[in-house]
Image (cartoon, rainbow, N blue to C red; front, side, top):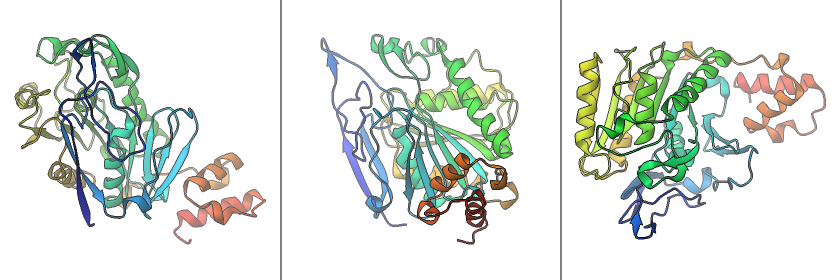
Length: 357
């Protein structure tokens, strides 16, 4: 896929990630009483992202988050559907739900939202149409490191030194939330945990490690971008065979590269078998090379496999409301015009899932 390289530069990270209809977050200095705050998000310094050359034709502008609890659906190229539920969770799934055979949950960094990695999820989905991506948004809460200012955060951060990093108030609640996403997918579709993966940037990467390594079931793997191990003394390693891929900038001034090395060392000491740490000459952000290598890791641990296709609810047992929702999500609204009987909606959805349309 032909790509173009774009970049946005900023001298310092923002306090939070303001909503914008622009493809890139505009970073600027924020200060109160001459105090500058930090936000561990992917565009902390210079953000380089791969952008499909036909981006404008397949990704619609982000809807306003002010319209809460409404569902927005946009269709990407011919491979995936992006859904925003209005409460901050974004789902990027195969256009034909029946094609799904894997799940990725991506957690954003401090001060960001699920929108921060929606573009990355859509790009990955265009190359790996068998995968579904879920991007939740952290609750807004005070962050001690930022003078108690409220912002989206998976847990409180007191400081970035090793001792402060043990104080992660709220991390168990966020851990339970991510576990609930995985459990819901497993119960509703029959997808095994071995076909699921957690990924995250900075604080989101830390949460992914803390959650994924303490599950009762082994995941396909964990991806960490510019992250670290939080609350190390609390972590009870239950899945030593889970594969970890960690990309980190050697010029990172916020989560320094030494923290990545320390994270790898501590987890190997706890008994983890496979921790693959990659360095990049970048600050607190992600780069095209990093995304490409992360995608290669994804394909190695979650390759297409029809034997793991999800088990969807039989259209004949769906309510009219469920049928209309599934038809709308599949982009079949124009084919449903004029349909009146439930049997007609059932047949339309069945034909779509069977690849007859």
